Image (cartoon, rainbow, N blue to C red; front, side):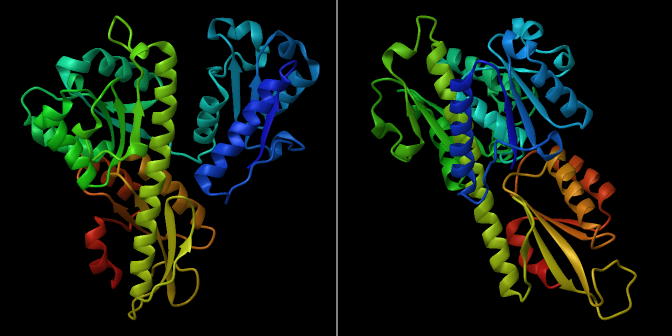
Length: 390
């Protein structure tokens, strides 16, 4: 993975950002992926980061480098201290590119990992809370999470009139697969929060982070693991009953990291389980990417017109979805299968998905998948054994 950082007069910020990116990539990939910050040319870069200020804007070498990158269609991430000063701190060539406000090195590192595809861009959060105790914070987080690119379920906005509320809640828990609990004193007394939402999340091994109110008796939610709890201090909730700016920034960073880490762990468990199952059935597997396996399978004995990599075998791409499938999974699966056309004109595809979620979302995903890949099949993990022998 190759990153270039362009800056003038900001060596300390560059050093902080380099370290944050290296630390985060090492944590997320277990050291299997390394990063280089000194590519020789834009063609060798996966991402160019521009640290904006007046000095960088006026630097001829930086301007030339940016122009080269744009001509080569290299991904660029401009960062400035204030978006209001974006035009003043960036060269004219960057004015049509969407930039980002500098927050902190750890937060920007999370953004960089999403830009590079190391972590999922498709981020989903279910907000679990007791209305009479934490509505101001719930609304604050709903707004901020949406601004940060999360898909957020909040009952205040997300349940249509005329539907069975509990059915929609269960579907949303599956669909989001990550629950942010606003752990207030009375939340444990709410059957909806304690049993229907948190109990369901834990029983189905969904992602979970608890935002614990000050002076909280932790025995109220003893099922929440200590390492999944982010405590708030008494001075971090203002008179308006909302989080202070510093507390909000810290909470957002924790949500970002926990979401990425827990989703990755869930996906890796599924990939391991599927690979073990296939091995038990006599099939070898090759790891393709973060979401997929390749399975060379024997062709049927009768004559077939199916494309193959070599006589007597065909390829099956197994795409792992640690959440219910949506259109983004189908887009990435289609890209994966298109790359496999180097070896096979039209590989099979199996989508192994977590069950549940919104029925209408799965219908759209199936429709998109079948347009892209004629031989695509969808399976819940428990249904896969019956398919392996086909």
